[in-house]
Image (cartoon, rainbow, N blue to C red; front, side):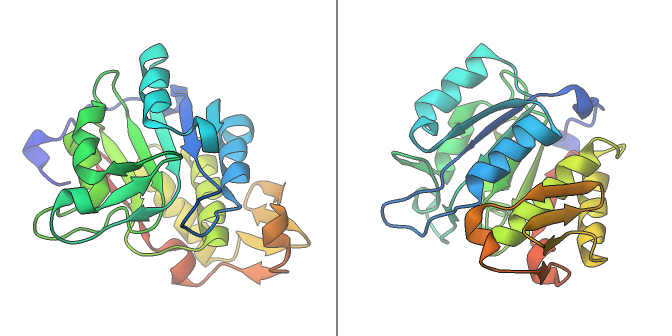
Length: 236
């Protein structure tokens, strides 16, 4: 918790929340993220309920418009992120047509309508320095979101797809968000989440893999590199 005295500790049952999922799989000057379409579809249509917007529809204007139309309790952003020490404007999350700079997070007004959880499914979104201790995640909390799930280092496509899938599965059952993350990470550590026979195997079932991940063949995701980068900040 960045500040316990300023944290909204009221409990809200997040199981009733809808997800606004947005992300990009194609970029001009950055590596593609071919798992993002599957990640968004899986979360908003198979594991949870909500709406997904990809590539051309992943703009700041549309993000603002969608939140004004409906009070989504969870906002899930799947894209590239880059944290750079120094001026906050140097760090950004990549949207389709622009960069969302870290100092712009406060303008999003996550408290109106209220957001229970912001998921930043990108690299190094919880990394910070003395000027911005918790990076993008910290700015999300400061702008009104109750909690944020973000990463401390560069993460792999397959590891993120596996962890996010398992996290939303556990979120259905766990009493709090932080416990859902812990259970998801333990499941990966135990080998319950893995790539096998062209499917993502999880503790509760399996899902087809995006075509690019089929090239990886069977793969275990037990190593901490795949799951330990993600951390929960704010109201657990």
